Image (cartoon, rainbow, N blue to C red; front, side, top):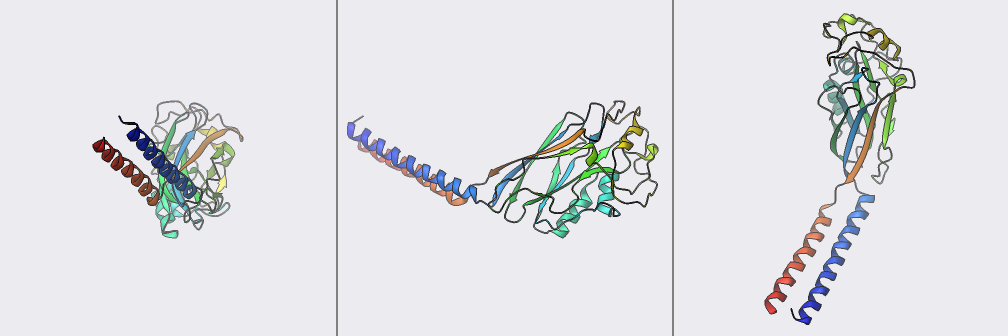
Length: 274
């Protein structure tokens, strides 16, 4: 290969590298202020072995306008459905109705036993949907769940689209009782031989409650083990982890492709010349 060709090729590569570096800087700069991210949510059941199981987690990312429930107030239909049957469909529908631009979905495909994890990724416009909400039934129970009391309890992203919260932990003392169904093992979800569709109306209000799980000790569960609560107020039960990857803006991709195309064109021309 001629020296002049080598020199020209080196210059071309250096120039293209500079273009690509510029593209990378442009992409990084847009990341710091980017609106669009791929948000990965990973959930972990941290409860003691043979203990509580958590239904698939319904999640919503919005503008902080959807308040699913309040401590000391009667649970609405969407909370009752999620807390009694582990079905978050009504809750997600209510979230979307209250915040039409929200991102809603589910993490996990089956109830999560102790020691297991599940993950799901959502594309989020952080300039619109920077607040996070969640709900999931905790079993065995008649109407127990985890969730956030307050539409703006968790602001995941700041004004620049930067992730502010890496993890949300739930301890036994954070578990809610929907107050919608009386305690009755025969009607409890996740207990072998019970009928979760049957219910005795309680007509109470949402409150904190984890001590009642001990009443299920010794019962056979749908996952084949004998239940043992093992819960104290400070026992870790669940954790939600977050990680965010920026989605590069189209102009960043265009600049990178242009640089690659320029290098390929010059290399072909110089090869023919050589």
